[in-house]
Image (cartoon, protein in one colour):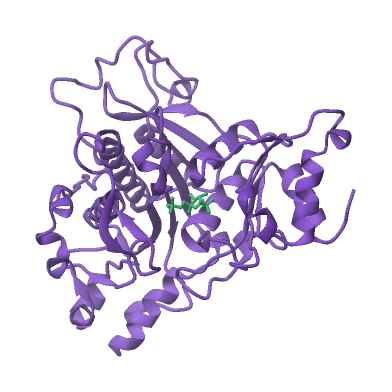
Length: 423
Ligand code: AFP
């Protein structure tokens, strides 16, 4: 877990209690050295904050192949076949509608910039000696890949530089980091910078996942004098239920790099156009199919599952129960890739608890809750099998929960079995 503390806390002496950016081991680590690029999105407008154009290419000389979108009409301007609708344009429109404020737009723009950098690093991993293990472990005892470490730094740098983030929590770190910033904001960002990284060395899809919260109103961190209490409060501020999310999203690094996000008004997808370095709208107001005959579980754990889950699994594979055509199995082992397919094609993704790990493997704050917010905004569902993920009040930053997510009908069918019922 990494924290960027609001300046008010740093001034009150909390910075001395926690690892600061300047003392981080990155100064001597070759991989970390490589990632020392600091992201500085301009904070005055989302348009500027979405990153620089590659030199020599102005936004106006967009290749002909880029299609004009229906959104251009809603902007009230004369449409042109060269007009494109980018993430920046979308953020401006959402700001005009009152769905995001300028600060949140800046946070999202800085996340998009981090995703561009990570996309470039992932693409070049094999030729830049960024595959393989970093040599360290994260606090959970999991081996860290080089790209886990680098992506964490890229994400944290971009959020710090946005000047709009007060607290950040990452899958990769447990020790809080106080950063000497001249200004900081209030938004709380939780993220998994590179989910599915065990797939990296084989060139298989990976992704980043994030969620953005406002500080909890019941515990204003500025009002506390005791540094220990302040630290506790930072953790509490991060630990909010998913229903309080202001934004969540993921970036898929695959055959293309695609950001899919929600600010509570539907789900929108933007694909990185490498020719212009911009995320271009490609998925408008995504709705997950109501039904879908694809299941995505690690069935290797079958013998560790309980009877209800095994009965469900037998049901979806039973030709007699489905007019001769059972469900298809698809499993990448990368939540972002598996969820993206489920969102577009329909079906269900599941990571259940089992005899060894009663709460499964996935983390509530930066995996289950952000993905469930997306699923619900797209008309689907995300549950533990017993209750909606968005309703769970976290007790720990790195808490694990079972996750079943996808088409409404498919998740409800699973819940039916988990409740001990049968067809
Ligand atoms: P890694 O980041 O260690 O590859 O874990 C990925 C993940 O958290 C999620 O993206 C996958 O869906 C899930 O774990 C795969 O876990 P199994 O390997 O146990 O199926």
